[in-house]
Image 1 (cartoon, rainbow, N blue to C red):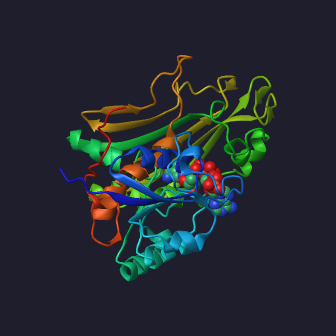
Image 2: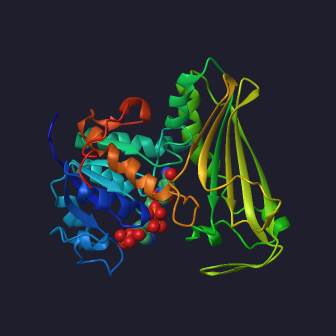
Image 3: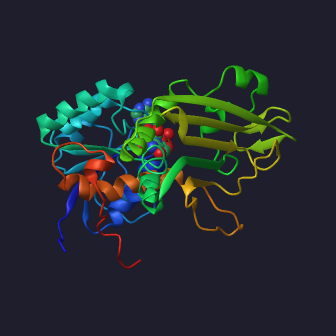
Length: 349
Ligand SMILES: NC(=O)c1ccc[n+]([C@@H]2O[C@H](COP(=O)([O-])OP(=O)(O)OC[C@H]3O[C@@H](n4cnc5c(N)ncnc54)[C@H](OP(=O)(O)O)[C@@H]3O)[C@@H](O)[C@H]2O)c1
């Protein structure tokens, strides 16, 4: 097998970026050549130090021009927010880009972004791939792969279950936990545009089956805290929102074909209780024969399974890097990328 090495830059070191950075340092087919950070406390630090590994000699910088000037095959671009113009600059400078910040898969809502990215790919002779757990995996390439086990499909349900008490991060406030239930139902925290974002995945799955999503309908239900729920940044007061179930349904030929559920709760003391068990993704395909797959992290010392969505997002990007570098220039959806064959994963611990 080829021992080809890929020169890689890690752009931003949040949870997703740190996971990818650790992978790049440890993977023998990758040569880490640069790290871009925004946090002044990280500037000047060795990349190894940022992820608890020995020094690598690669020093984190906040100087965009230095990063652009580097000779690299690929950038894993994982800033907090999408930045299509910066993605295009990197592509034009001759670096392939893999981005969990999206956009992911071309659809009517992101046509302008993809036109820009496509033009930058042509100019730079480079490729772009949007990656992530959802969108990017659990609601598209994973169920599309599972459909090979079906004789007939009636409906596909993808269920995301996250215990936010174990993974609070910024999302507790952003998602409106602790708000008044009636007020949240009247004005949901999740933007009305969010389904368009996930329709990138829905379209990939539907089109992979030779079908088209004609409309997406949405539904929201909430559950309330049955007691005060303390978490690292505060307290979710009894009676306020402690669970949210967003349901987005993609319709095809007058019937629901793909349903995405997002169950986010702050622990177990909520009513109604949805009893979905530990954090996971569940793919349920109704039809002949019915199928169910549960994707979850391994059991930890407390007997529970953690939510690995953010580290998985970093790894889905990092493991796609060799395939993206080797592919022909342009926007690479799952369909163009084909079966990704990761490199350097099988190695001594
Ligand atoms: N598709 C999916 O399934 C999926 C899942 C999870 C996340 N994501 C996306 O992946 C990206 C990374 O997620 P994350 O959880 O690692 O994010 P995060 O921890 O919130 O932030 C990532 C990093 O972005 C940098 N940053 C902070 N403020 C910034 C600003 N104003 N402008 C530009 N960069 C800034 C920081 O880098 P430094 O600390 O290095 O300075 C920060 O650590 C996000 O865009 C997120 O939406 C996608």
